[in-house]
Image 1 (cartoon, rainbow, N blue to C red):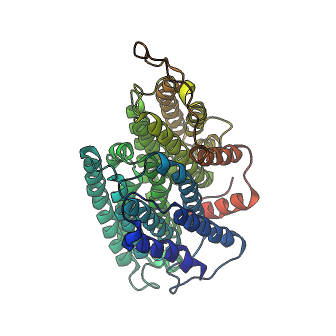
Image 2 (image 1 turned 180 degrees about the horizontal axis):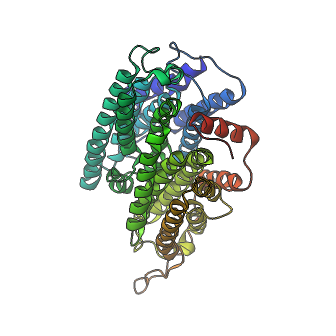
Image 3 (image 1 turned 90 degrees about the horizontal axis):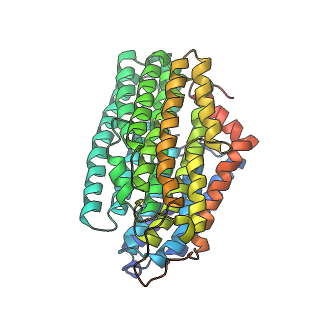
Length: 484
């Protein structure tokens, strides 16, 4: 019953919001978003305490990997819902109905992805996330947001089509061995799967869902989409959408590992991981827009996720820990960037120099976020990145560790140059006869969410709660790896 409620409540609420005349215009049903987000997180929390039973014949179920993704989704959605309270007071969207309905539909779709143990249902959920997000990217309804929306839809549609072909190939590999495309049956009968079809399925699903993740070279939609979407939407895409897409790759990796074909999958994963790091390091240098900077940072971290998966062993645990850390840190950074855009109308360096004088709280959180997303101690991303590098050394691949560290160093320099310049740089002189702008009092609604996320990411750098560590270890073992 709880599994049904998790996706049915936000889906039904989205239908009500989109169809009810009372929600027309710019009014956003903020209270409704908060109630749904709070109820969703409460049900997810109960799944950590009290086990549940599969529904629809096992098509929807909870396992460590899915529960990790589901928890990330629920936490980030609640934080975003709190942030929206302050956001709509400053910048109400043109259509409150589309805004709230799209967010709720996205929550429902992401929940289906996290719970799906039938890989066709997972594919449907991923396609639904694309359709739910597209109107949110186009909220400003100008030429640039239209272009970004079309680019996102076209590239994502190609990716999701390739993932569909991969799903068909996986069904062909299965033949009559167990119930079609049901994850437990695929794993139980993995040795009976046709190796050639399984290899083809892995490659198509990796490229298809990798496009949704933003792995290089399929990342081209990210800078424009993250740059033009409202910052809170970009945060959900970077923290939740990419995490759901990674889950699709993780599911087929589970099957491949169980079939004894890890030696085929690992070099491919390593190649995509290293290429993504190289592309991110190349394009981060010289960026002048914070949102586009964070888009390339997301490409970097998607590369780290598949790199750890490809290294195996403790690298799989590093990947799972990095999945949590990156999602929360990206949500934190995009919400803070949203505060900057609300105050100045732009996320570019030229419009925001001297931010520490005008937005001291957001500027401080932005600098802390810089050190978090670049993997600096004591934040959680340092621990997860260190674990992945350690896996490369332990696995006899010191050159991978060296390349990874070099890319991370370049990325740190590129990100620090822009963000520190914005925060600490000299603002442009005020026009003659006008006083330089002073510090602006920032709404608590716009700061409390990022502060909460920052606290969690900091905590995960020094202490990982026992239940979380056990869950991540079990997920890593399902992926063919091991715990720390």
